Length: 615
Image (cartoon, rainbow, N blue to C red; front, side, top):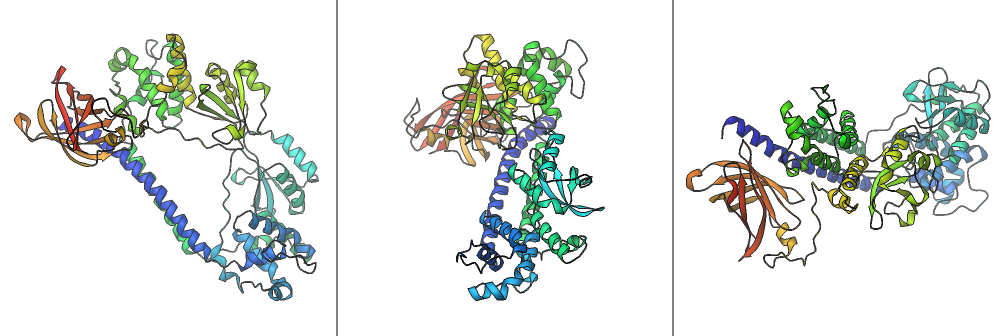
């Protein structure tokens, strides 16, 4: 094998090894995050909860429920005190600002109400500061936020952040009317995309409106409002709020653990990014070329997708141009579609495609969808009654806008509703036929809010169209749309193979990293498996142990199918040799796969292949 062929073989093995390393890295990342959370939970069990217990007692929500009129927050502290109690009752820890302000407020009750009833407080803030953190606001781009902000001209204020999918003027008018906002009591905020700011004396109206409308409410607003009220009573300018809010917590073991977790996650992502740089991008490059978006931009009329493939092909190109990787289903369907262009357009222009799906399947993953209750979702779904269809999850459960049906040309019989209790996701949804894909996708993308659109819908719609043209029913979508890079079809333990009496589960799980004996095109070989993936895919290095090729090594990839049959492929530089779908049998304490190796240097007739594993 010359240096060029060795390099190609090394790259191929590295690619398979890379996916294995990525899977292991992600699994390690998840495991470490879980362990860190367990350690943090154990540390928090030993935290000082005297402040929290005292708050709940005065609010009448503690273990010793307060039913006496002489026990409780005074009128000035009642609003803030009960807001803290509700926060704690929800199972949420106090923020740094809430805790610091609460400790100041609670001191006045120490001698008169707390100590006589068996409650005490930390003596100083430094004793407990390490237990608390600044609140972290994860901005949801589809939900309105009411937040605490610092403005240079007005110091601290209450700010509104509007998402991109709402009509701001109407909401703002309703809010300001409800909260009795007068002219001059609002001003623009330029920091962090916050839209508008209001003074603290309008806090109660703003908070009430936001709660009614299910906005995100910054938990620190109530603390700031309490401090502002206290300052007004004492005749202090409201600038002191910033000073009182500039304290910090003492770094703790938890902070160090969270920093370690963050750093570990960053490094794993860097490793994954470097591995993915070595992936096979021939499919992606070919798609971009035919769509006119590749490095060699296609400007010839004779180059491009035909009319049948144009919609799906260009949707793939837009997906890639956005910097997003293809999903498992997108890539599998795309490779099927692109084969027809290989000889006529791709190869003459210096582009090529992977020969088989197995060569690249390890590079792709199923898309993951997390339903956001503040955003509409259009996703691909399947059930026994309707097979593959499009499901739409709406922000407001149980409602549907006539615009969707009108834009997509949907008739009444073409849709159905599934209640949350009958839905696998736990959310109610409307279902639509794939027949209406184009109208539904257009409605989601043409200004009807900001929807999440499942990237696999275009692939399913393309397959459905191909089946209709071929006169095939929709059943084929379920089969063709179920490629797996990491999981084979489940088989019951009592399923028996056609050539022996071995349960398939035992056959599919017999391989482990290590050495195995076998035969390749009639000559004895030692197969050394280096990496095994969950779907039964594996790779490694083979070595001839006798005959004219003795000592020659080669890389190989393989897979045990859902039916127990074995396929092994060997790259020989100018092509490949493949032993495909070799059947198995039981030979004493071994499982033996036997078949024919075919391909470059062997021919179509084939030569003997064998792979032997102890059961």
